[in-house]
Image (cartoon, rainbow, N blue to C red; front, side, top):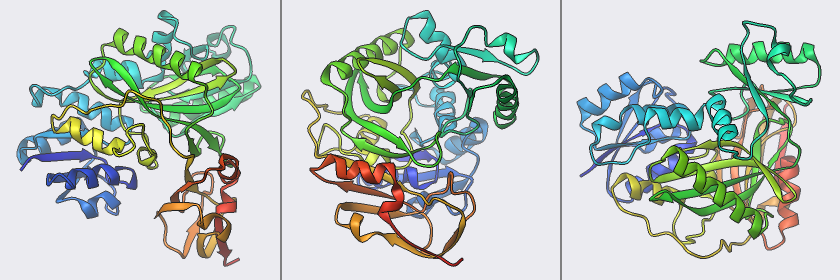
Length: 392
C-alpha cells in the first residue's frame, strides 16, 4: 500500500484525503491545528508546522512516505518543492519555480518582463520613503504582502498617509521584508483552474467571484463564469505562455484575474489547490473532481482530460458568513436557500460566537439552479442563505 502525506489539516484538505482513501492509500496528514477536520479522516496525524520543510522532511523519511501532496496554502507548496529530491521520477516544481509563481514581487516582475497582463506594480520596503518607491503608479493603490493569500494584510489606499500605514502593517504580517504596491484594477473578479499536461493547460473550472463585507476575501464562486469563449481562450493562451516561460511541471494551476470587457489582468497564480472547497465545483470532466486529478497525479496516473467546452448547470460555492459579531444561539440554512443546496459543510457548531465576522465562516454550501441570477443574489448577500438567531 502506498503512503501519501497531505500538507494541511483543515476542511480545505478533506476532499483530497477522501479521494486518497477511495484508492485504499495510507494517508498521513501534517498540520498544527489539533482540531483540524482532515486529521479525523487520516490514518495517522502528524502535529507539525507544514511550512517547516526540514521538519516535514524528517517525517517523510522516518515514516517512508511515497509522495507528498500540498494542501491549500502557498507554504505547503513551498515545502513540497523543497522535498522534490526525495521522490525521484516524480514531477515537482523546483523551489525557484515556486518562488517565481507564488511570491507576488517576483511574479509581477515576470509579468512585466514577458508582457503578461497584470496590474502595474512596484515592490517597496520600509527602509526609504514609500512615496518615492511607488513612482508614477495611478491611485488608488492596493498593498499586498508578497507571501500571503486570502486577503491577509491587504489594503486599498487613496492618500499618502494611508499608504504609509498600510505598507508597515503589511510588513508586520509578512514573513518577508517587502510588499507589493499595485494599481487598483476595476472589473469583475474571476478565477480559472487548469490542469497542465506536458506544459499544456486544459481548463477545468472557471467562475465569477464575489466578496461580502470583506473586500479582500472571496466569499462566493459561481461557475461557470460569464467570461466569453474569446476571453477564456485569450486567458488560456496567456497561461500557456506562462507555463512555457517558467517551465512548470504537470499538475494543477489556479489563477485569479480581473476582467473588464475584452481585457483582463492576472492577479495571482498558484500551484496548489485553492481553498474553501473550491475544488468541489463541477469540472469539465463531469465525472471527475479536481481532487481525483490531484490524487491521480500523486499516484503516477496520467489523468485523461476533456477536449470540449465546460457545460455545467450554474453552481455556487458559498461561504456562509454573518454581517456582524455576536453570540449565536442557532444557525442553519434559510428556507429560501435550502432547496438549491446539494451539499453543506458546517465549520462551526450551531451555537457559537463570531468575534471577527470579516473572516470567520459558519460553513460552506454548494447550490445549483438553472436560473443563474437566483444564485447571484445569494453570492452578493450570504445572509439571505442563513436562518440565524443571536443571543443578544
